[in-house]
Amino acid sequence: MDISHSFKEIEVESPVDKIIKQIRNSIISGQLSPGDRLPSERKLSELFGIGRTYVRDAIKKLEFYGILKTLPQSGTVVAGVDITAMEGLISNVIKLNENDFYHLVETRVLMENYACTQAALRRTTQDIADLEKVLDRHQSRVEQNLPGVKEDFNFHLRIAEASQNKVIKSLLLIIIPDILEIYRKLNVCGEGRAQKSLDEHRVILDCIIKQDPAGAKEAMKIHLQDVLDFSLSYKG
Image (cartoon, rainbow, N blue to C red; front, side, top):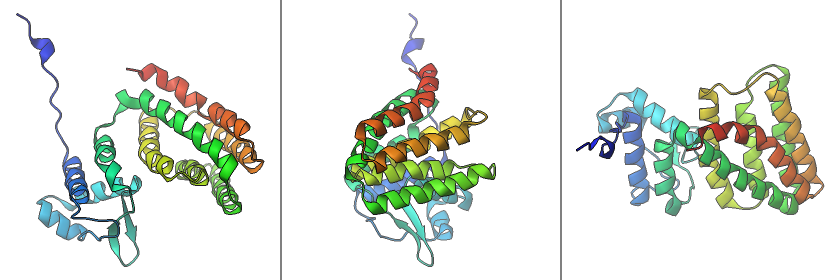
């Protein structure tokens, strides 16, 4: 009797994943709360019994997802993330891979369509100023032929902030970095894509400024269509 189909590949956790899980468990259990400071990298390295490079990589990953933040002269602290939702979110940080690419993109499109629609209805004068500032920085990077991934990411987060929906922003903080990481790994970014993306951002912002929710949603749909089309080849 062939039972080979009942066996699954064993997943081996990296030291970074194990550190993330321990920090996650400390937050979920209430041992660490928003604003609490973590021990130094050296101290964490001693506590975990592992090299400082792994500790540093784990902290950087959690910072990138908005779960930790490093403050000047204060060290690394727990950010004000919604603790109730954190257990599943950090598990996804560890487990997501190329096979989840389509589902990540599909979810992102749904959330961003909603976010830009609400941003067009709810945005404040300060929201517009913040979005314009991010676009100016992005423009500068493009003109210097430099990567603008951070600026691109921040533009979408600013739209989520302008929607006045904190849950959308928290979810995008988890989803978008994974998409960008897989996108870079697959070497998808083609020639001229940076300027095209920037131009599309300006159309989206123009609709938000004009308080045109239908136009903002359509502009966002167009902006994300390339990555959605590409992700279809990874649909499981």
